[in-house]
Length: 145
Image 1 (cartoon, helix red, strand yellow):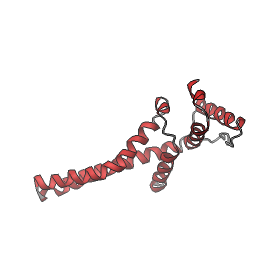
Image 2: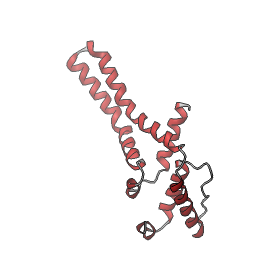
Image 3: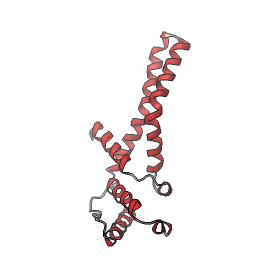
Image 4: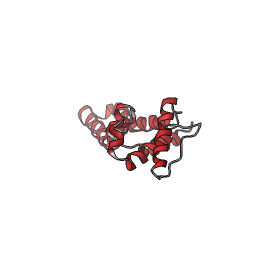
């Protein structure tokens, strides 16, 4: 799979996934998205500080080590995006497939257009349904789960 496409899929999946704490009990996406969002902001700054401090304290002879450390810190948010991109295209297990179709039916019953999951449904399809469900369904529905 193309690395750039995988990163783009991860970015889209991160934006689609509903950031609801309740889902953190069932899906690792909540924690991965939170960590990746934090890493996108903090890691470039931390990478520069660590590399500059290494060069300041140890001198220019340690430039290769400072660059390696810099690249490691910069790669952390990319690792999160790669995992999210991989997960977005991963097929749903049957239990989630059923639950997604139940959510889709509930939304359709309320008059909200929601396309049911197809035979080749993946986690990105489930994320779209979950996002719509958390936006439109009242809190009492989620307390029943």
